Length: 244
Image 1 (spheres, rainbow, N blue to C red):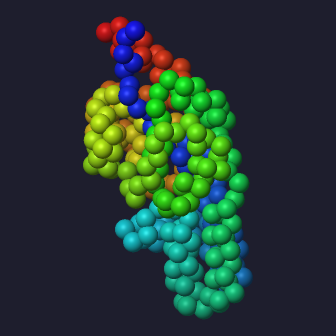
Image 2: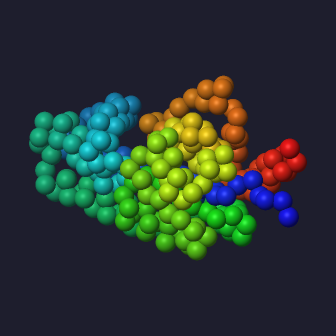
Image 3: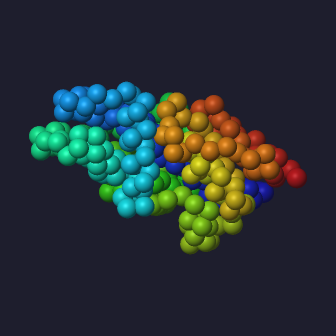
């Protein structure tokens, strides 16, 4: 039997396997109501700009995830109210964090079937950014845990990070596929590392994750309308590579 062309298939978690960004958007809406209670009148656009500015600036300190998000909201609240935000209002943000950290995990359409199908043939890995406890809890609560042989929770997804993961697991980049919704985190650094990347655009995504795919990076790249198509694409690549 011919050797399969890939030794490892990896998936992103948030907004690739399960809904995530909508929770942050709901959190921002709740934050806007809190600011209204504090007497702050601000447009949605200006509020988004303020939150994005503080949140991106805080990535080097807090990384990604709910804790980072809510700490950034607290900073924005202090800034926009000139320090007048009350303890009761700040407590509302703490409750928001607890809600976001424990809310139900809802898989995206076709995820369970696609992951189970690929896991029957390939070793699968979850590579996701954020807080270790929260991300592993999401995977456990998703019902997908048994399908993933490896789990990597990282502070950032860069070419160097992917290269270290592949080296640690003894995987050649050209025999690796990453499936995710972020061009910036799941596609460009993987292609630069020499791997394959499958982009599944999400209905909602954080502006920080947006990026353009350079024309020269079209090799080893494909885009899917939904994750349930990933099995078909992997099979098509297998046919091309094993017949060449």
